[in-house]
Length: 185
Image (cartoon, rainbow, N blue to C red; front, side):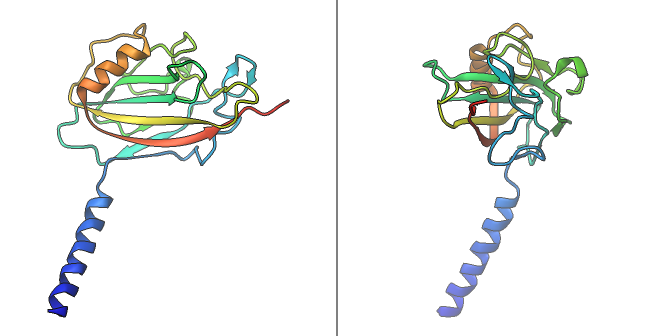
């Protein structure tokens, strides 16, 4: 009896390890636990480099036809949070965004990807810029595996509408959370 329980325990451990290794995962070579001046916005009283982080993902679910990336601050004092980056229609054969891909002038995002409006009122990446003295804000960066090649939206679509379409088309998602606070200069 003890031998059977021991073998069952080993099988469960091996099986859970195998499945855990195959989950949809988002990672970044640029981000740690806290964002830096590299990611900080350049405007609204912030003086960062406004460089979007490198992102890569793996193990998308079967049936994935495209991807989307969002970056959201639920701690913004707006009543509705703050959308910092919204990218969609990323082709399914892509698994990475290079550092700086959020700067549309650099043309680093995958062909066909659309970077729509942020809550800054501009397209592309808009980094963290919490109000001074407001403490740490969390920035949730999410990759969405989508069941459609195109959302049927364009670069002038606001984040709430994109979010609605993502909600209706997401097969799976994976996130990274990083933190940032503005310090006195």
